[in-house]
Image (cartoon, rainbow, N blue to C red; front, side, top):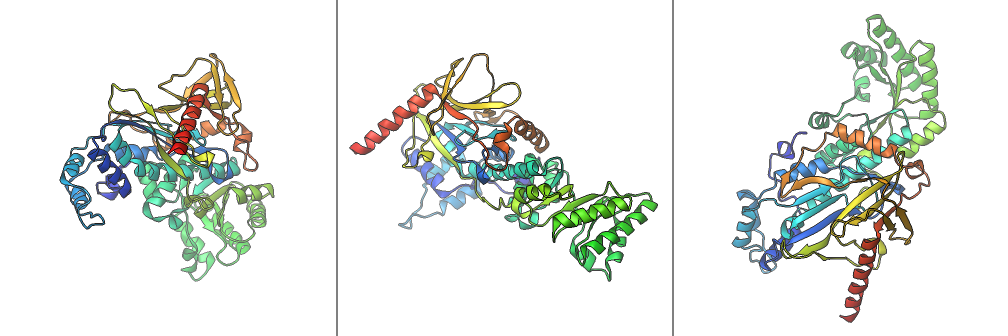
Length: 492
């Protein structure tokens, strides 16, 4: 993968919210900047009305953190910031502290392509409090959106079944990096290719594309336009047939297809971009088959998403490739994942015990989980059967129970149960442990992970919840901390 710096040609250490820096400054002023802290990035509910998500964005994070530093230009800018009294916000001592920044955190994360669920930590950061705080915004920015788009792509691809799905969203994406991130995440989520050539170059994603209506309109007639395109691109001949009259367009594409065949080439297919896609695809398939082009693909586009694709397939549409743009690249029906990054433990130095932290809320979904957390995923050899969140400082019993936080339902596991711990090392003391897997490998992992989820969890309509809970001792400690914090709040 090309680096973010190669794209933006700039230091990205200021990719943060101001309050991260004001908190870091205050930690520094209080002598707390180098206290060890543990933070976790998670989301509170699964997107798009589903019951799972696909983790993505970690390669961006690794690239960003590797190059994280404060240089003269960044520090010069920070020195100009003013408080409400028009005096400098940050003094020279703090800027010198930032100048000497050496990233020293441990970062563990679920590999890209992992199926993940609400309240599970996707990323764990343990290290100096000020450092772990400053990187919050960038982590959320990179993981939230790519996880959202990878999940949307997985849903679209599930609806498409064995058909190919192409990501066509660059023109409608949220500016340059919105388009790049969406293309990369969509590929991880299962799309076969993208129209985004820069994403293809940066991330090794296959690129696909044909022509637009403007090509046809630039000629005096549609037959002339198709013939010219076939002559120019005989090995990439997919004809957009709905500029004027779709059925006549199919007939004209067939005529050019015969000319290509006579020259030793084969028409790849046609594309439908408007009208009754079901009926037009049925008519086009009949015409193509009768003309001797049974292998010619029928590509469809036009504001598709997982629901419309499922509806068209159920109605008998004869479409084998789906071009999905706006509603994928913009995560149209849920434009934000809602990921959060919460402090869960802190200690004054390496020799001190962790002090565990919990955030309260009147909304149960917003109450955090204390500890230095890990996810253990159990399977029965065929499918995943449940995830247990446990605290590494407490350890994980060889057999025991885990408890759901929403309904206190308990699940038992035995020492013989097969499992995998999902959070794996990315950085140790600020040093990258391994280069992140390519987008292609992340895509393979996503397909493997989703294939091992129960079908009831991944179905489009009325999906069942996947079993996720807290290891029993962690559940009990969380309850104790919640009770103590509420008592303190009442007393104060």
